[in-house]
Structures are given as C-alpha cells and as structure tokens.
Amino acid sequence: MKNKVKIARVQVSLTQQQLAEKIGVTRQTISLIEKGKYNPTLKLCLEICYAVNKSLDEVFWIEKESGQ
Amino acid sequence: MKNKVKIARVQVSLTQQQLAEKIGVTRQTISLIEKGKYNPTLKLCLEICYAVNKSLDEVFWIEKESGQ
DNA sequence: GAATAATGCAATTTATATGTTACAATAATT
DNA sequence: AATTATTGTAACATATAAATTGCATTATTC
Image (cartoon, rainbow over all chains, first blue to last red; front, top):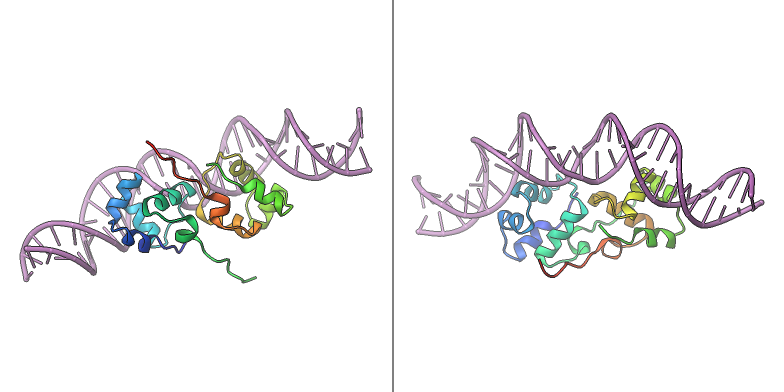
C-alpha cells in the first residue's frame, strides 16, 4: 500500500504524533501507513486527507498494474 | 460511509455479483459497502475504482463536515 | 403470475486494522 | 557528544472488515 502520506504530512509541517492526534489515532498507525505496511480504512484515509488538505487521489491513488 | 459505488457500478452495467467476482470479494461485501454499512479498506476502494473506471475522488470522496 | 435474477440481511467465523505499551534507532538541537 | 525530538518496530489485545452460509425480499423476464 504505497502512498504519499509522508510527503503530504511534511508539507503541512506536522509530525506523525501531531497528525495522529489531529485525527484521533495512534502515532504507530500513522507510521505503519507511511511505511506501506498497513491497508488503511477509507475513513482513516479521508481523515488524513482533511488534515493535510489534499484529496484522496492526491494522497492515495495508485495506478492499476497493467499485468495479467 | 456514504459513497457512489452503486451509481458507478450501474454505469458500467455490472451486478453486485459480477463486480464482486471481478474484484475477488464476496457479493455481501459489495452490498454492505453500497449500503454505507462498511468502512472499506483502501485496497478494496482502489479495486472498485479500477473495475468501474473511476478515481477514488469520484467514487469515495466525502467533503469534510465543517463544524464539530 | 410463475420462474428466475438480483439484492438485502442475519448469524457465525476468520483475517486484519488499530490500540496499547514499551523500547530501539535515528535525526535534530544545544 | 550529550539531550531531546522524532520515527521504527515488536508483542499482545481489541475492534471490525471481510468471508461464509443461508434465507427473505424485491426486481426482471418469460
């Protein structure tokens, strides 16, 4: 689950801790999502977007892999 | 978790069953998501988007509710 | 209007996202 | 380089997304 959370977070000058608090989630959850080790729920994705002032597509869109 | 899955699915003439098979998920999961009773994972959201040829924003974006 | 397709929904099970706690590792600041 | 802030990660607990099975209800089609 690659994404642009870290880039977007840094752009608005938030630490993982601050973003987590703003959203009401633990820092570990943010860390794991940034590292691509979690497949977050839509609700969490939306809350992250609101916190960093970006859209779902900007932060979470991944082109479909052409493969079989 | 309101969304536009049903609208998008009908636009590409797929039944819940067909969409579910295309994505590799059960029909019930699609049904519950359409009804807004599930908070789907990002991976599932993306797979739905690929199947209906729409973006995350088009199918799943929800404006932030202004006030607390 | 009977038969079939499509959808809604309930109960139970399974997989996994997230919480909690804690500590290690790295970056930033003095 | 020592202190502090920030981030990575591990083990275990909890909540919930998703699977499974089954049946009821609502459209469609004949």
